[in-house]
Length: 141
View 1 (cartoon, rainbow, N blue to C red):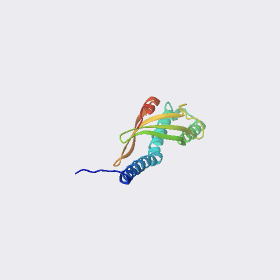
View 2 (view 1 turned 90 degrees about the horizontal axis):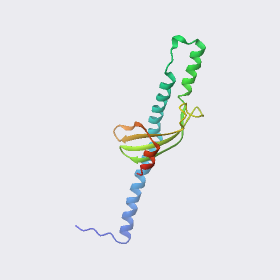
View 3 (view 1 turned 120 degrees about the vertical axis):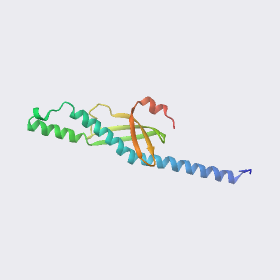
View 4 (view 1 turned 180 degrees about the vertical axis):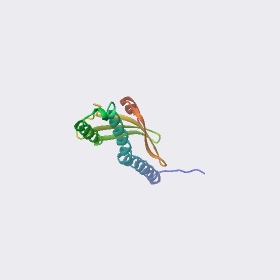
């Protein structure tokens, strides 16, 4: 069987392919901004809280010190992304996020971070590990 696409049929076929590719790309990016962002925030919050809890001995602290430390730890929960972008697809995605915590710079002093993530239609988004800026910029698709 031989299929020949010439003239308006070839243009229509290319248009259909382009629409499917654009729709797939937009669907991946729209879920990245919602579902993947939630996973990234959970990862980052837990990291900040773990660092904030390191070396705390509640038995050695006064009531005022405990309250101040509690408020400090609660403020670490307010992670916002000013920008989020990704490169790659499927099981190998590198995400760049610009982070603010409670409206100011993050406690680790890194306002821009990069993460390697994966996406599955069954399990959803998953943060695999933190990565480097180089891996983000080398990832073209």
